[in-house]
Length: 185
Ligand SMILES: O=P(O)(O)OC[C@H]1O[C@H](OP(=O)(O)OP(=O)(O)O)[C@H](O)[C@@H]1O
Ligand SMILES: Nc1ncnc2[nH]cnc12
Image 1: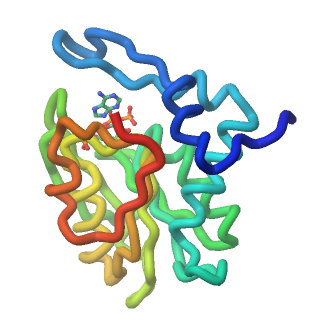
Image 2: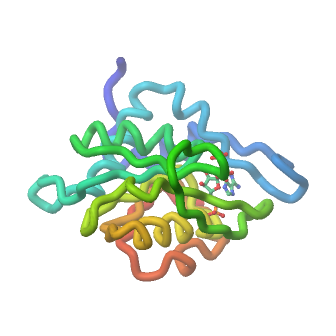
């Protein structure tokens, strides 16, 4: 393990370690590939710690009961954030993947249409939830997840993402939620 980048340098590290792939998954899209960042232990650790801070108050106390992450890349960040905070992890998955009873929400993506599902019994009434994902683009995924959390009886305490695509309206789509963004392009 190498040393962690200082907080002010994290955005620059993310910029350095997230690779642009032109034309994936379709023409006109510049895909933000996080795999080089995941392969860098210090940067991955710093990102998880910074995202987990969104689930703490100013004194460092954990203020959420659950972390919710979205399939697939959201899982990679959200599960270690849940472990860092000492709370449970709830998966939001693509259709037909969750084995028990689910509710679902459909939405538009930058490059298509998608549906997400969450188990009906994933949350307890009043659970405070931190939603964690890699990319905030149109905001459709995050807004659908917020809807699933709220329908499940939870309250979204915050949305924390590695990267915001600032030229897309994700921020507006998710509305007045506390939003933590580690890097904006
Ligand atoms: O703000 P939005 O426009 O909704 O886009 C952001 C979402 O798009 C990507 O997921 P994707 O559906 O491509 O799935 P993956 O994680 O399985 O690659 C990304 O991981 C976010 O979840
Ligand atoms: N351009 C993009 N790169 C990576 N993930 C995304 N999710 C939505 N848009 C994306």
